[in-house]
Image 1 (cartoon, rainbow, N blue to C red):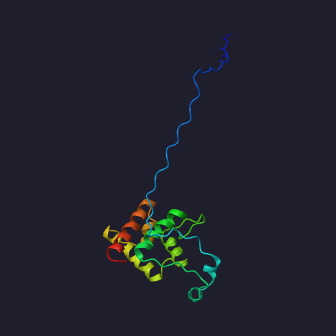
Image 2: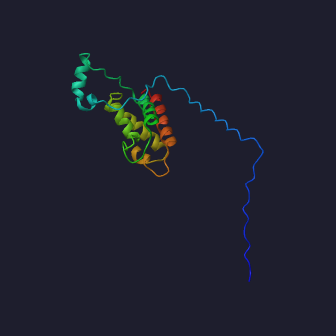
Length: 172
Protein backbone atom coordinates (compact mmCIF):
# COMPACT_ATOMS: atom_id res chain seq x y z
CA UNK A 1 0.00 0.00 0.00
CA UNK A 2 1.35 3.35 -0.99
CA UNK A 3 0.59 6.54 0.73
CA UNK A 4 0.14 9.77 -1.10
CA UNK A 5 2.08 12.65 0.25
CA UNK A 6 -0.06 15.33 1.82
CA UNK A 7 0.66 18.97 1.30
CA UNK A 8 1.12 21.00 4.37
CA UNK A 9 -0.40 24.47 4.27
CA UNK A 10 2.25 27.12 3.90
CA UNK A 11 1.94 30.26 5.97
CA UNK A 12 2.09 33.42 3.89
CA UNK A 13 5.34 35.28 4.16
CA UNK A 14 5.02 38.80 5.43
CA UNK A 15 7.27 41.37 3.84
CA UNK A 16 8.99 43.79 6.13
CA UNK A 17 9.40 46.36 3.38
CA UNK A 18 7.49 49.60 3.44
CA UNK A 19 4.44 49.76 1.14
CA UNK A 20 5.10 51.04 -2.34
CA UNK A 21 4.48 54.69 -2.93
CA UNK A 22 2.03 55.64 -5.66
CA UNK A 23 3.65 56.50 -8.95
CA UNK A 24 3.58 60.18 -9.77
CA UNK A 25 1.17 61.03 -12.56
CA UNK A 26 2.87 62.41 -15.62
CA UNK A 27 1.99 66.01 -16.40
CA UNK A 28 -0.74 66.54 -18.98
CA UNK A 29 0.64 67.26 -22.44
CA UNK A 30 0.67 70.92 -23.26
CA UNK A 31 -1.54 71.74 -26.18
CA UNK A 32 -0.31 74.30 -28.67
CA UNK A 33 -2.15 77.60 -28.44
CA UNK A 34 -5.28 77.76 -30.59
CA UNK A 35 -5.22 80.12 -33.56
CA UNK A 36 -7.06 83.24 -32.31
CA UNK A 37 -8.62 83.75 -35.75
CA UNK A 38 -10.46 80.42 -35.50
CA UNK A 39 -13.57 80.64 -33.34
CA UNK A 40 -14.29 77.88 -30.83
CA UNK A 41 -16.41 74.99 -32.09
CA UNK A 42 -20.12 75.80 -32.09
CA UNK A 43 -22.72 74.11 -29.98
CA UNK A 44 -25.12 71.79 -31.80
CA UNK A 45 -27.79 73.65 -33.76
CA UNK A 46 -30.65 74.97 -31.66
CA UNK A 47 -34.23 74.11 -32.50
CA UNK A 48 -34.56 77.58 -33.97
CA UNK A 49 -31.64 76.93 -36.30
CA UNK A 50 -33.14 73.58 -37.29
CA UNK A 51 -36.75 74.69 -37.80
CA UNK A 52 -36.65 78.34 -38.90
CA UNK A 53 -35.87 78.51 -42.64
CA UNK A 54 -32.63 80.21 -43.67
CA UNK A 55 -34.49 83.03 -45.44
CA UNK A 56 -36.44 83.79 -42.26
CA UNK A 57 -33.22 83.69 -40.22
CA UNK A 58 -31.60 86.18 -42.61
CA UNK A 59 -34.66 88.47 -42.42
CA UNK A 60 -34.69 88.29 -38.62
CA UNK A 61 -30.93 88.98 -38.51
CA UNK A 62 -31.49 92.06 -40.66
CA UNK A 63 -34.08 93.29 -38.13
CA UNK A 64 -31.76 92.58 -35.20
CA UNK A 65 -33.90 89.70 -33.90
CA UNK A 66 -31.42 86.97 -34.78
CA UNK A 67 -27.69 86.84 -34.11
CA UNK A 68 -26.07 85.06 -36.99
CA UNK A 69 -22.36 84.15 -36.75
CA UNK A 70 -19.91 85.64 -39.22
CA UNK A 71 -19.20 83.22 -42.07
CA UNK A 72 -15.53 82.24 -42.32
CA UNK A 73 -13.44 82.07 -45.51
CA UNK A 74 -12.36 78.59 -46.68
CA UNK A 75 -8.95 78.67 -44.95
CA UNK A 76 -10.46 79.45 -41.55
CA UNK A 77 -13.39 77.10 -42.21
CA UNK A 78 -10.95 74.20 -42.63
CA UNK A 79 -9.20 75.06 -39.35
CA UNK A 80 -12.59 75.46 -37.68
CA UNK A 81 -13.48 71.95 -38.93
CA UNK A 82 -10.46 70.59 -37.02
CA UNK A 83 -11.72 72.29 -33.84
CA UNK A 84 -15.18 70.76 -34.30
CA UNK A 85 -13.67 67.28 -34.76
CA UNK A 86 -11.56 67.75 -31.63
CA UNK A 87 -14.61 68.77 -29.58
CA UNK A 88 -17.13 66.21 -30.81
CA UNK A 89 -14.80 63.41 -31.87
CA UNK A 90 -13.97 61.96 -35.29
CA UNK A 91 -15.57 58.92 -36.92
CA UNK A 92 -15.75 57.10 -40.25
CA UNK A 93 -18.59 56.08 -42.55
CA UNK A 94 -21.26 58.36 -41.07
CA UNK A 95 -21.63 62.13 -41.07
CA UNK A 96 -22.66 61.87 -37.39
CA UNK A 97 -22.67 58.59 -35.44
CA UNK A 98 -24.90 57.70 -32.49
CA UNK A 99 -22.28 58.98 -30.05
CA UNK A 100 -22.21 62.42 -31.68
CA UNK A 101 -18.82 61.96 -33.35
CA UNK A 102 -18.49 63.36 -36.86
CA UNK A 103 -16.60 62.78 -40.05
CA UNK A 104 -15.18 65.74 -41.98
CA UNK A 105 -18.36 66.16 -44.02
CA UNK A 106 -20.50 66.05 -40.86
CA UNK A 107 -18.37 68.72 -39.20
CA UNK A 108 -18.64 70.90 -42.29
CA UNK A 109 -22.41 70.42 -42.32
CA UNK A 110 -22.60 71.48 -38.65
CA UNK A 111 -20.63 74.65 -39.42
CA UNK A 112 -22.84 75.41 -42.41
CA UNK A 113 -26.04 74.73 -40.45
CA UNK A 114 -24.97 77.06 -37.66
CA UNK A 115 -24.00 79.79 -40.15
CA UNK A 116 -20.22 79.66 -39.72
CA UNK A 117 -19.63 79.06 -43.44
CA UNK A 118 -21.60 79.76 -46.59
CA UNK A 119 -22.36 76.91 -49.02
CA UNK A 120 -20.07 78.49 -51.63
CA UNK A 121 -17.13 78.81 -49.22
CA UNK A 122 -17.72 75.24 -48.06
CA UNK A 123 -17.47 74.07 -51.68
CA UNK A 124 -14.24 76.05 -52.08
CA UNK A 125 -12.89 74.32 -48.96
CA UNK A 126 -13.80 70.94 -50.46
CA UNK A 127 -11.92 71.92 -53.62
CA UNK A 128 -8.83 72.76 -51.55
CA UNK A 129 -9.02 69.36 -49.82
CA UNK A 130 -9.33 67.67 -53.20
CA UNK A 131 -6.33 69.63 -54.52
CA UNK A 132 -4.22 68.44 -51.58
CA UNK A 133 -5.35 64.83 -52.06
CA UNK A 134 -4.58 64.93 -55.80
CA UNK A 135 -1.16 66.40 -54.99
CA UNK A 136 -0.55 63.36 -52.76
CA UNK A 137 -1.59 60.98 -55.56
CA UNK A 138 -5.06 60.17 -54.17
CA UNK A 139 -7.81 60.09 -56.80
CA UNK A 140 -10.96 59.94 -54.65
CA UNK A 141 -13.35 62.20 -52.84
CA UNK A 142 -12.31 63.35 -49.37
CA UNK A 143 -15.20 61.54 -47.64
CA UNK A 144 -14.21 58.22 -49.30
CA UNK A 145 -10.59 58.83 -48.30
CA UNK A 146 -11.78 59.52 -44.72
CA UNK A 147 -13.39 56.04 -44.59
CA UNK A 148 -10.35 54.03 -45.73
CA UNK A 149 -9.11 51.27 -43.39
CA UNK A 150 -6.23 52.42 -41.23
CA UNK A 151 -7.21 56.08 -41.47
CA UNK A 152 -6.62 57.97 -38.21
CA UNK A 153 -7.56 61.42 -36.96
CA UNK A 154 -3.95 62.56 -37.33
CA UNK A 155 -4.20 61.90 -41.10
CA UNK A 156 -7.46 63.84 -41.31
CA UNK A 157 -6.01 66.71 -39.30
CA UNK A 158 -2.96 66.83 -41.61
CA UNK A 159 -5.22 66.95 -44.69
CA UNK A 160 -7.32 69.79 -43.26
CA UNK A 161 -4.24 71.74 -42.15
CA UNK A 162 -2.56 71.40 -45.57
CA UNK A 163 -5.78 72.38 -47.34
CA UNK A 164 -6.13 75.43 -45.04
CA UNK A 165 -2.52 76.41 -45.82
CA UNK A 166 -3.23 76.01 -49.55
CA UNK A 167 -6.36 78.17 -49.29
CA UNK A 168 -4.50 80.80 -47.26
CA UNK A 169 -1.65 80.94 -49.83
CA UNK A 170 -4.06 81.90 -52.59
CA UNK A 171 -5.83 84.46 -50.42
CA UNK A 172 -8.92 82.61 -49.31
